[in-house]
Image (cartoon, rainbow, N blue to C red; front, side, top):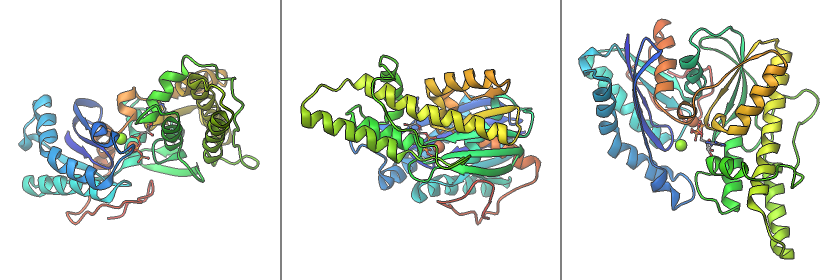
Length: 338
Ligand code: ATP
Ligand code: MG
Ligand code: FE
């Protein structure tokens, strides 16, 4: 079963070809970071235009690299939310045209279901139920997965997403954009106990997150330093920040696993590429005899292969979208809108 998948929800134009939902024949990712870097973040209107320029080339390249012709495709899948509406629309329009032209099923995929499903490329037969921590530029969610396509949201951030906090702290440190990978790299040479930073656990056994206090504490630290004229060791700030963020992410994920008695934990989203998060989660999951699964870094950040994987399980369920499919910028996980 051959699926072509398309992802354009933010600033990566991506297309992939998957066989049987597990074999990635191609996964072309054209990042727009160089275009957005001079603005210090993604400019939605610029992103839409770039997707429009790139989409046909990226799809062509995905088919060529896979050695697959259009007429061999069994279905076409596309991210239709959540994300930037103008960016999503480019992928949705392209996928609809292909589905209509070839008379094959159209599969609408939730971007977060895509992030989660990157784990099924690593482990196609997980032992459900599973706790998945979805940590990305726009989300920090704890999700209970009872089976393919069965999600319960257990907790979410009340303010900033973890990736957003990484990006903002990187900006105030003058590291550049996107900040997550730069903080991760710099932190490796810093002392993570150098600066005391707050960890927000919230009341009782809450599985919600809050990262704005941590971000503000870093900003205040830098302000005080510049006012009093003392030297800032950026590596120490990066390391202390990364440690504070990872401590909370790991603690709450394990709390969720204990609460729901799940033997397996998964990581998803761009921040799941973070080196310390992967190490700490590995160590702590091992201590509690829980199995940890995470995708390789390239499948953690935005890509179309994860969308193709999610689409495969929707195909098996016969869950197809009509050709009237529209972009849904605030689409919640597990609630299709078509
Ligand atoms: P969403 O998936 O919520 O719609 P998004 O698609 O913009 O948002 P992703 O592409 O999944 O987000 O992830 C990008 C985020 O991951 C950015 O905030 C980036 O800084 C962060 N990130 C990437 N690599 C790392 C890393 N090694 N350490 C920390 N953060 C990272
Ligand atoms: Mg991106
Ligand atoms: Fe994403």
